[in-house]
Length: 215
Image (cartoon, rainbow, N blue to C red; front, top):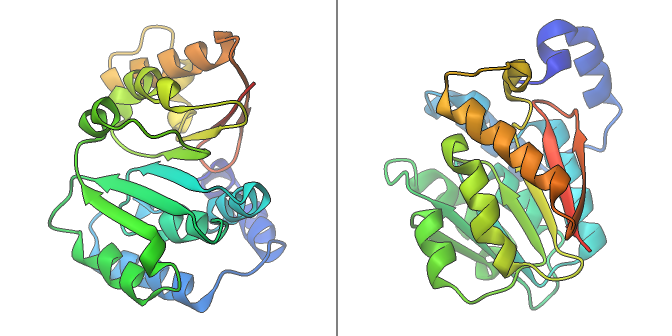
């Protein structure tokens, strides 16, 4: 949920009304996510989907990594900018929900470019030797700082990384947080700001997106 969605829903509706429209497939996927999942708020929102789409289309990446597939909304947004010979690898561990993103991936125009893996992201990052042009992380907040450390060796100059939910409903302002997830997100934000190999900015979009670019 976004800040405006909770505090000023009229502004949230205004923002959505003045953004480019989503495809019919994305609309259908968003509806089905709310109908068939117990935590539909986990879906990348309409506004965030527009951000992911525009960034991917600007970069035209050959290799994208997504950590946290959920129902595949963000995956399809990211895939829209892939180079013709490009590929997106998307990782999740929820076997029970896998049928839903698979259905939409297989019926999309990007079916041959999406590699959906049911695999732990830390394990994948330790095993792969791939480098990625664009990385989106939206899963397992307790491991955000560790993901950053594991992701860095798979980046190159120009690689863009996006971490979602980095404002954590305002919990990042807590001085002595008890939740491990809050601690890890605070650590990630500190690491991103201090790492001289990257330039970054936290965008106050929905629940906050940490936008990094490798120098």
